[in-house]
Image: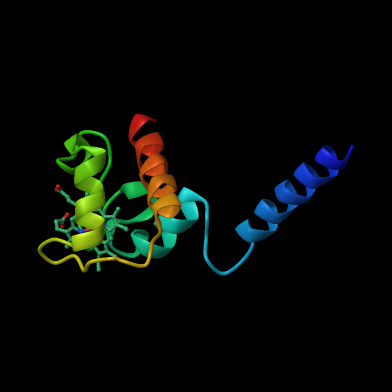
Length: 99
Ligand code: HEC
């Protein structure tokens, strides 16, 4: 019983965290950190698309992490995302690329 209450509290805590300033879902992180340049649903805008078939889609997850952290020509480095946020972000990008 104690275990159940505890795990419910942890779940509620995670849920509430998702509602705070720092987004934890990949799509929210994308919209805030990438979408302004790479467009809605990776479609491209002031920067190129990341969609299936693009040069960006052929890159490995490791390359994404390096590009995000270090930036690249015309793209600023983003060091504000923690490992969990980076994982969620790349996972979201892969889901959109696969659909
Ligand atoms: C200020 C605008 C800007 C933001 C914000 C931005 N990028 Fe970029 N990004 C660029 C530009 C400019 C390039 C260079 C090539 C291009 O135009 O696609 C680039 C290149 C890339 C590439 C390599 C593309 C290729 O053709 O190999 C990837 C991958 C990428 N960005 C992912 C991201 C992700 C993920 C985020 C969010 C964390 C992000 N970018 C945020 C502007 C931006």
